[in-house]
Amino acid sequence: MKILVTIKRVEDYESKIKVKPDNTWIVTDGVNYRANPFDEIAVEEALRLRDANMPSEVIAVSAGPAAAATEIRSALAMGADKGILIKHDGWLDSDAVARLLQTLIEREKPDLVLMGKQAVDVDDNVTGQLLADYLGYGQATFASKKESLESAEEKAKKPGIKLAADKKSAQVAREVDGGLEVLEVQLPAIVTVDLRLNVPRYASLPNIMKAKKKPVEELTPAALGVDVTPKVKVLKVEPPPARAAGIKVPDVATLVNKLHSEAKVI
Image 1 (cartoon, one colour):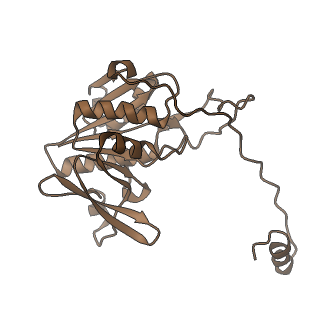
Image 2: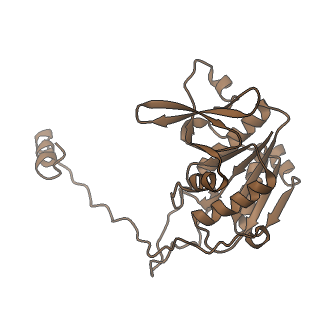
Image 3: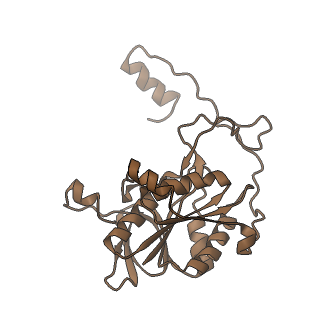
């Protein structure tokens, strides 16, 4: 079984982000980068599925600058078997990424594609859905994990996505307003993952060293025959409004009065 998982290079959410003076984008000098947290969950799920359904292979894919190879190496250190980097230094909107992945998937022919439900930098939450449409695949979004009576140790090893015995379909539990909804999708399929599906493992030092020897193929949009001219343009970026200073009140009665008359929340 072949599993393809995407991993995006994003700004570290713990970095202090500043907007450029001309409001065209953020100041990138001094900003730390890391793998998209939702994608790390997708990598962990891919590894659990592989280990529970051997022989299987996990391919980690990223699209972006040469520096994105770092995030691929982090997926390889977690346990992925090989990586593919689609190198592109310019802006890639969600549609361009979906079309690049479409072409790559048609070449690699994986049985299952796992993706984070969204990237924490632009929060579009559309790439997986676009990709499923372009490929004509079934999709299950926001995959979560059903609660069970298993111990924490047992849960830490098992995948949340359940493959059928014949490997032709998969059951995916997803969070909805009223609880959990379980879907069955025919493979090949696209599955985007949510926070509570699993907890990604830490890469051990031996695996970090092994990752340096694992193969990473480099491609370009031109080599894949994909036009990545953006269809979405960022017109303006603005920082959030500054928070007003807090105040102290002498007693509960004054607090309740202010909440009622000024904040109008009660």
